[in-house]
Image (cartoon, rainbow, N blue to C red; front, side, top):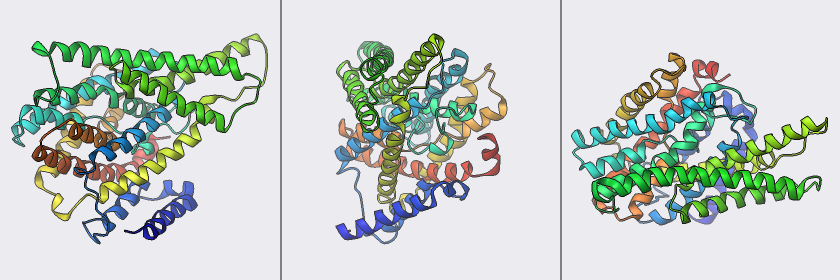
Amino acid sequence: MNLALWCLLLGSLLLSMGLTGEGNRRWPVTSAMVYLAVGLAIGPSLLHVFHFNPLKQSATLELITEGAVLLSLFTAGVKMPVPLSPRRWHAPLLLAFLAMALTVGFMAAFGHWLLGLSWGAAVLLAAILAPTDPVLATDVQVRHPGDRNRLRFRLTCEAGMNDGSAFPFVMLGLGLLGLHDLGPAWRDWLIIDVAWATIGGIAIGAAAGAAVGFLTDRVRHGAGLHGLWDDFIGLGLIGLVYGLALAANTWGFLAVFFAAVALRQTEEMIERRRRRAGPRARAPRLSDNTLPFKEQLERLSELALVLIVGGTLFLDSWSWRAVATAAVLFLVARPLGVAAALTGSPVPWRQRLTLGWFGVRGIGSLYYLMYAIEHGISEPLALELIHVTLIVITLSILVHGVSVRLPWMRRQGH
């Protein structure tokens, strides 16, 4: 497609989605489903005027998906309710770490015993598919900082954390394939990739987010400097935290999410202190002011990346291996992982079933896939993983997109 056709296509999509606005929520389809349909139509499945080759352009796609996930994680973090409550966060922590690990185990067993993959390839595929997505799951996530819905909070919080908690399993898969040093008896993997990278990432993010919250209040309190400069600070915090986390060999996705959480918690704490000192007008918050811009960037990245997904698929991409993988993930591995992880928790069974179903897969999985390709997996394995992952993402957009618009889900979402 030439530039004129791309401008016409993207302009029409943006205008149509913008003009319909909130009316989109009443439709039986999500925005991601619309973008996917357009991508399939212009891609090799139908008109063949656009084709994106993820194997040849893996470095570019890795960079794009990385940026999209970082924006989405920050957006999710600043919408987390305050103050922090161990009871409220107990279930999301179980989902993000224990349920995700169990899902990796179930899918790795499926990949090895039924798909015939080596253990390294099976673990890598499972790690790519296990985390839920913060980009494409906006319809089941917290809608604003004051949203108190427990189901949406748990899904949002889980997606914010498990894009980082899946990284150790990606590295384990690469290690079993001989592309990452696990150390004797996996010692280096357990100490560095699991313990240090996880705890360090959370600590770096929380410390940086709190520091920026205090610094912003100290430097700008009463100065009225907001608007565009808040967006600069938000983007700067993402870049700073992610850079620090990578330099320290920790998981940057966890760091960015917890930086956003800590920023909002810090601003709330400062506000409570001021209210105790005497009545005064509520000061503008960085976390509130930077949210709309990040949400718009998130929606633009969703449009671009879902179009790319549609533009990669051929009609013969729909193999039994890929469809069976999606079915096992959606109907067996994810529900069993959630049910086992939440055993003994106060989460109602009806909500456990809903949590088990809404494990939306999307841009996070695409990023991990590109990360693995860039770290040297063989071309035949790369093609196999691309094939399966793209079909799983496509089916997730479709089946979870339809599900979120059903009346029973709408009732639970209010």
